[in-house]
Each structure stands twice: as structure tokens, then as C-alpha cells.
Image (cartoon, rainbow, N blue to C red; front, side, top):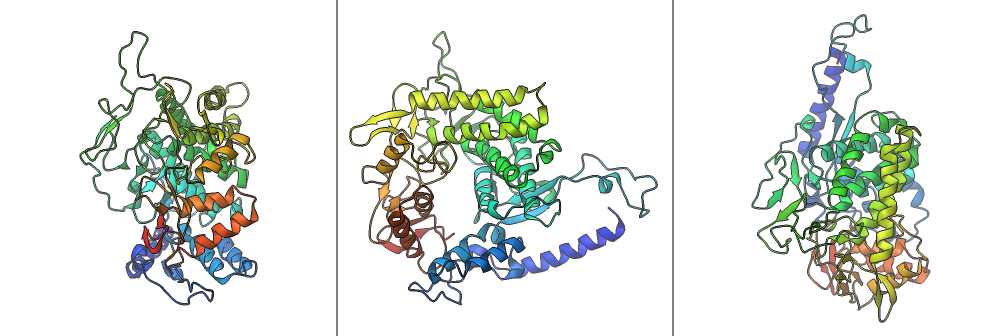
Length: 503
């Protein structure tokens, strides 16, 4: 880049480092109450960092917050919204920049500006956005996609690097890079361009295929991770109409890798001769709850679904045909096939057809194999199955879940099988349902029994048209933050002061 631009960049970087050095770790900051407190019953803390400590500034977000202050009249509910909706942009955009060139660029002959002007300056650069999951300095494919999804209502077309659209493009580009490097992995360390210190993630887990411990933070095969890459892509193009972006970098190659990886995990546990077959990905960890049979898991029959070793919670699956993740992947394949069709055109639609065929096949398999009879609720969706008739009847709060099936676009909320499933999930007949005076909702084996997850309560609201249900669930959410004004991972149904992960 030109000397003037180098000096400008160095000045900006020095100022950013100075500001960041003075900013407290948000997990420490969010663990204390800060004034001004809300004027409602719960006196909720103001939890946004001071402006100089926020990791991304969006005028559209600030304008929306100002506008909604007169719309959300309950002061506690507004404070909860004011703290939580900006949280991703305020606290988790750990780094943004451009991909390093593959080799040193040559000078552009006759370019205006003279010495130091290069071909890379004259060409468009590949944006990158490293979005951490919150209190862990790593980028989960699923989490970063879901974090950004909260801003699709204010996402507008823009080529400006300071825009929200650039944050989305940077996340898509970085996710594509991660998938091409380690398609079975779910969480990654900062890109080398960021100069953020990376540490080896090597531990006693036994995982194949091998991966680079300095690039990968966690390598758990979760089908929803690659589905989230597709979801993020669809969210961006739906809001901006920017199809051209997807033909510029490595999106097409990443989608091909997703298809290859997913199809490889449809493998039957036995071949035609009855010999045991290893899955392309295997995982064993020393702390229990991990796949049996030499790290492959229990036997599964190829029924047209894709195996997932782990749930969105990162917990190991009991049965590896995880239905919510297959639902999400099927829908995401179908919606992003329209992007691929723009890239390939009608005469060379190989990947487009592959996406649509796989999407349809998964949907057919869910219809045939994942619906089970319940004596009380009628036909419902199982959470996990193995293709041999075994089924795990439960739900988990993390998205995708069975409760979230309409939200992820797989079906309509009035679907009768979904409604039966929803009634069971939100009842004491669900083994991970938690109830009490503080908050009632879906819990998870990831945390102790008796703890409801606000994430599931929010999804309950988003999949309901019952005003009474929505109002009561909102009341519980507002009243279960322990005064911090943030959404915790889980909260004891009997004590608002017992929670995990403050935000």
C-alpha cells in the first residue's frame, strides 16, 4: 500500500491498541452491575461497554435503539434489549482486516500515487472478520453465524469496509477458509493476518483426520456448523441482493467441500459383506460421553441422513442422525442453491443440482424415519435416531433444535407434527424440561438438571403466536438475569442467582 496509507493504518492501529489496553475484559465487566439502572421493578444494570471499548460501531444499530426506546415501554424489557441486541457488535468482533496476498504483489506501472502503489491496492481485497463466541477467543462456525443473524433487519448493501455488510462478507470469507482447511472442525483460532497470539489446541482427545492445532480451536464434527456457513450466506444475500460477492473468492470451493464432507458422513456402519466400516471422522475423549466402538459411535444404517458426532451444545450425540441439524442442513442447501445457480449458470449446474438433490433426500429421510408415535402427543419428531429403530426423545436448547424447526425455515409453525413435538418439548414429559418460580423452560444435559436456558425461552417466543405465552415468557426472561440485564447460558428455575455464563 502507499506510504500515506501505511502511516494512516499504523496510526489507527496504535490508537486501537491503546484503547483496547484500557478496556476491561467484558466477562469481568459484565459480572458487575453498572449505573444507570433501569427504572423498572428489577433495576437492571446497564451492560454496554463505553463507546471506545466497543468492537464495532453501527449507526443503523444506534438509530434503531433510539427509535425503539419509545416503542418498548417497559423500562426493564428495554434495558434487556438495549444490553443484549448490540452485544455481538459491542464485544465479539475481535479483528477485521484483509486476507494476505498469496505472494508479494508487483508495482502497478504508471499508477497515480507513485512509489509503493501495488496491484493489490488497485484490486478488490478479500475482507475477513474474526468473530469470537464471547468469553472464549475462538470463532465457532455456528455461533458466529447465529450472532450475525440478529442484525439482518439493519443489513444493507454497501461496499464500504466500515459497513455491517463488510462484517458479514468477512465472516463468510473466513468461514470458507476454515472449512477448506479443516471441514470436520467446528471452532477456529484467529487468522494469521490478525497477529493475534495463537496457542496449540492439542490435548488428549483422539480425533481423525488430523488437523493443525495452531489453526483449529476445537474439532468436533457438528453438521450444524457447515449448515451455519450456508445460513450466513443466505442471510447476507437475502438482505443485500449481492450475488456477485460469492463468485469472487472461495465460496464455491467451500460449498463443494461441505457437500463432499457431508456425503461422506452418510456411511453405513457395515459394508455389503458385513464388515465394520470406520467413519471418515472419528472422535474419542478421555472424560466420557464420547462415541464407542473405537471412536466411531454406535452402529448406524444409511437411511439418507447425515451423521453428526456432536450436538450444537458440543455434547456427544447418543445417536448420530441428529434430526434438527439435518433439518437445518436440508433447508440451507436448498436456499443457497440459488446462489450457486447464479455462479454456475444453467449449462453447468453440477453443484447446484447436487445441493438440491441432497436437500430433497434429507427431507424425505426425515419424513420416513424421524417421525415417531407418542402415546400422549401423537406423531412427533425424534431428536436423534440411528436408522435401526432406536430414537432419543428430547430436545436441547441450542440452535438448531426441534423447537426451532420453523425458525430455521424447515417447516411452518402450524405443521401438526411440529405442534405435537412442541407441546411435548414444553412439558414435564420432556426429560430436560425445567420448571420453578424463576424461569420455566427447556434445559440441557450440558448443564445441571433444573436449569432452564433463556435461549430456548427466546425460541419459544419466536415460534408462538399466543400473546399470553409470549408475555409470560418475556416476564421470566426479564426477571431471571440476577440484576445484570444480560441473557445467561442457563438459570436455575428456583434461584436467579444460580446461573452459568453471564452473557
